[in-house]
Amino acid sequence: MEREKTKPGTEEEGRQLIEGRNAVAEALRAGLTVDRLYVQKTADHALSEIVRRAREAGAQIRFSEKEQLDRLSETGRHQGVIAQIAAYAYAEVGDMLARAREKGEAPFLILLDGIEDPHNLGAIIRTANLAGAHGVIIPKSRAVGLTAAVARASAGAISYTLVAKVSNLVQTIRELKKQGLWFFCADMDGEVLFTRDMTGPAGLVIGKEGSGISRLVKEACDVTVSIPMAGDIDSLNASVAAGILAYEVVRQRKYRP
Image (cartoon, rainbow, N blue to C red; front, side, top):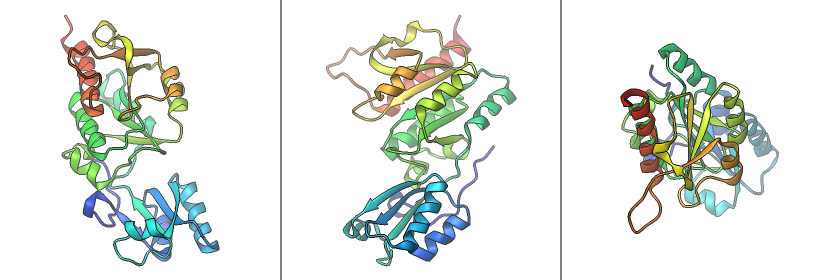
């Protein structure tokens, strides 16, 4: 099943931007997915209405100085507001569970706690598709969305992989636990990954570059697992870690004696 593209704005430098009050308001009325809305701090009433609509649609709102908007702008005519449009439409978490049921498989989801690098997100989406995961879940705030750069880094996998954006990752984990999923978060102080049974309904949780998984998300998970390392450094790139965990699920489900 292919994912639906949103109508693009501008794709240079991996961004899709819509600038100006009328253009942004029209994009919101048309139902385009706005990941982030950059608004000049001295917003007047007209911009306040745009902010309200964008917030109701689930966009991140970034109040910024005019100088920052000037740097972001590709037209020089932003009028105090710039919308960053998602390159692809988002799915719902329920769509992922439905896909698992359709395939007769135990749900297999990948949840990302604050991945900010578009190349990492794109690589993880690619891995999720190849490993047979039923979807990827990302948070609305403090994380990269489905930008054009993410789409390129996914090497086409974004067209076939369900990606949902949620307001609260902890609450999403709790709700999915009611559906029978067991959550494994990757952290250096966890049990060795290869000793855990991951054949049942599973959610893999990967933390952000550098700081890892946040405390509340980690506490919401069932098991903390680690990847054995024998080198001189103590961490892996987030997309590499996601790949190792995802393919351990594949190994256990399909190739375990």
